[in-house]
Length: 347
Image (cartoon, rainbow, N blue to C red; front, side, top):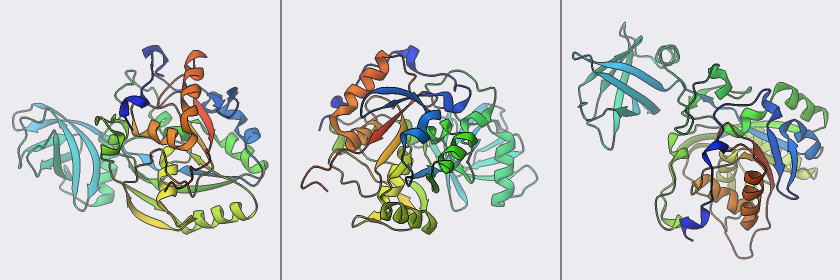
């Protein structure tokens, strides 16, 4: 299947540069009949007994701007994640960094542990006073860093909390689960009043989520790996919803990837670890019935996932939304999708 088959025209003026207020006033197109709603209407569009599943990851203030010692040259570090006592980061400019280089930013000191490879380095971080414990370093990152917005957003956020969901909990992501940005405490209360449940997973989103597929065939794309946790309590809620005739409603593609990773032999199970699941057309969905998601970049793995979920009708949904002036990408509007029947013989 050609990557070019997942292209569409996206005018620049439709790429949202700031979120709407209030959050749940974002527009929402229902894919089944192409009718216009808002996220505020979500409780009405779902059914009593459904289960809404959200990703409660919190975005790390991962963009660090510092000075290289002893020259004082400006360096920008973008933390991608932590493995053991080392952090992976993108450095700019990377050409002047070598293993052993030191960068000071706010109350943090970063030691470069590896020579750059395609702009990426491994770091060890400690505070300016020499402390290196995980909690104290995370606090120092939060104080010194900036929330890393996607590259297509060119306007500074007045309130960094607008790039966090209202249910964000544990710090770990380099980007927000953007479909969840639309939900408000009022919307969550209304869902509960309608008899619609809420459950949580955690998937720590990496920056690769913004990268387009660069291979000619989608099957040749190498999917990035992300850490995730589907707890037993969420699995129990899913099984309960299914037994009572309810549906599992994923808020965002990260929830889809997490739940489908945790679904084995058609049944969900608790899972804690990494996932590199790449969902393409023909995937046999075992966990998710309904998807609330934003509009995604042309030629991206996220758009491919949407096409796997609703089939070729994705084109009419995107074209209709574009023609009606919907706002696209991370701070844009949303769509509500119901899963297409799985093709016979697919896996």
